[in-house]
Image 1 (cartoon, rainbow over the protein chains, first blue to last red):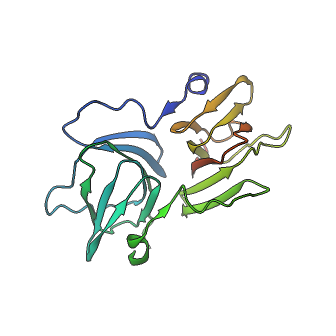
Image 2 (image 1 turned 45 degrees about the horizontal axis):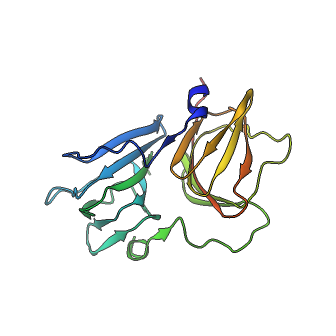
Length: 116
Length: 116
């Protein structure tokens, strides 16, 4: 803890100037949960692609803007800084849009969804 | 998801004007993890009190400022927006200071620490 306690890491720093693909970094994880920082810059999910995840995902946009689409729901969810949403496991979704002119910083928490 | 997908909740909104105690709200949880928003406004841990938690806690300050102290570590960890730290289970700590003139908004993710 000595190292971490003197100069904390920051979610808004260490952003690359340009990056061809979305940037995903694991901040913390164990077998129960995983915390990721995701940085988008105009990136979107490939056409026709849907995320279909085994874990629950709680996600918040901390900087920038994004639009999520859920399967069978035509109306996109427009997320601005502070906006958050819980995406239950296997709720299919895709990123339809992220701001093209600034980085969009997401914080995502994935946690286990036990079978019912 | 219909309701949530139209107007997302926001971490920076719905702040009370004044609150005598720290405000803690559970945003999402299951048996593996729990996500909380905590709002402080000059609140500190009681003198001599140490948090000694069974779960790991990853915490980030999103607005305001705070100082954390860890046991056997005299140097406080000064957290500003975006600064984050992982507090392993049973790592004793206390909140020494939060900004007196503005709300400090924390996001905390608690997740299970299995016995070794």
